[in-house]
Length: 255
Image (cartoon, rainbow, N blue to C red; front, side, top):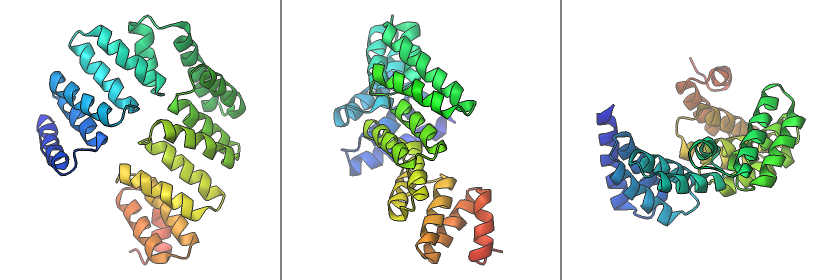
């Protein structure tokens, strides 16, 4: 496993040599160094990522952890609080437990958890109310916008869900599942071209997202692009997507 991170760092070094202005490349190199417990080196990469993208919530989150393991609690809390402000819900509990958070953080966390519990019980309207209350306390929560958007899509409020997914993506431009969910909502509105753009972004961020290939194939099928549809369905099958198997067999001469 350690060799895997070392090899990844080598690849990321080469990527940075080719393009030194990509915040995500520094972020991932920092993650690899973090996993190798090279916290000072990881912090240096996280610093560079933030210099390039000051709203990169994941970077603050993990830089906080790196500082935590260096016994820099003050620095860790500053980063975790910033991550919360940028919508990183995982950082809320860290702030509450370690940083003497104010009541707003606690209330946001309570509403978010209540919304999630209601979502799991299929009480989508109740969940929407809780996520809305959380967003009133902290309007920079990408996860709250995303989760509220999911609830709206469950209620067939697809255009309203797209608005929430837009907000989540504005706060976190690398939010894979928000792009995916927005693509699904656009597909339900027969916005094939726009849905394809979202699924393209999902695949750009995660090349092994089998569902994105499957649904992008459906969109291309809807546009009578059978060559493109079959290419996507076959790729989805390769990645283990069971739903794509039937389409690949029926339309793409899959044996």
